[in-house]
Length: 128
Figure (tube, rainbow, N blue to C red):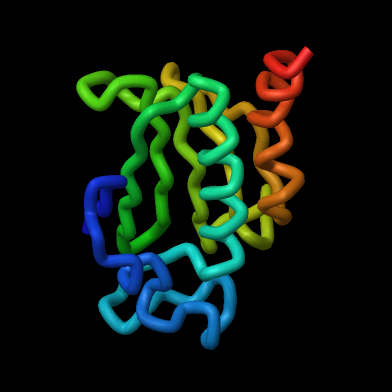
């Protein structure tokens, strides 16, 4: 399932109650989703980057093995970054990762806030 910024079904973002089952549980459709707290944190960063003129569009994919939030500068391009949640990696490197357009893993870890800091550094440089 892919949800883009033009879709108007905000109830789909919650993943059908994924927050009640825990952060790594797949929803009833057998998909990994972002819970409300995770999605709020990602959308907060997205909003600040849009305001700074860096990002313009996004897509959310809920797959069987991971959830992916892709960020685009232009809709017709490949994503600049992918924020992924892969519960199978939670016990190893951490469930969350930020991946660049070239496929390079910029940061991986068990806490979403710490992983997203790699994307906030460019935002801080724009403010100065």
